[in-house]
Image 1: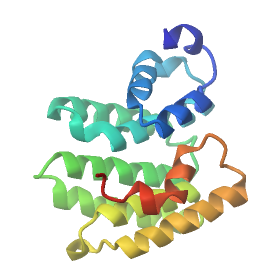
Image 2 (image 1 turned 90 degrees about the horizontal axis):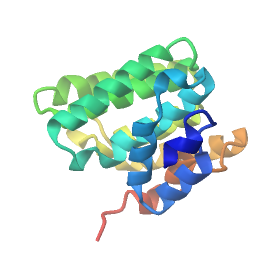
Image 3 (image 1 turned 180 degrees about the horizontal axis):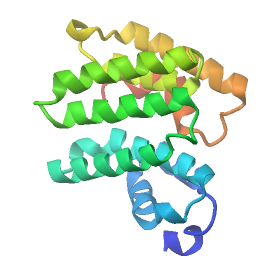
Image 4 (image 1 turned 30 degrees about the horizontal axis):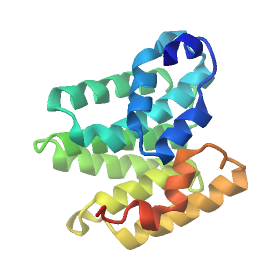
Length: 193
């Protein structure tokens, strides 16, 4: 149903944003599973990769290990095909997120992938220390990294605040779930009751 009107159309950002607000990730999953990557323009692939990143980040905990590994592998393949299309800072931030996903999904990879994620987000800031997406990913990494390994929830909130400001300066706030997550980080990352 979703694919019939969307496979050859633009990414339905408004519908996906509303689904995120309603915490209905089945709409994201159906969208991601119905669209054929190779039929998308590079611009739409760049939008698609953001939803793929968000889906893996927000829903992966409830999936079986082989499902999450397949999702991460697909995300990594798609990301690699955008290497020369995306700006360097967001590309490195996505790579950092990929490493964080791998760290979270495998106890064997936890430390090496976690450390690699930190190096990659540092690289993103070398390209652009004000990139709002890189700041958002840095906030998520800092929030979930234990203090023993350099994480800081206080610093994470500063990253989210800076990300919010830079999304606003760029005029990238409409139907942008990354902006909304950064803007509402205090409540978004609060323990669920």
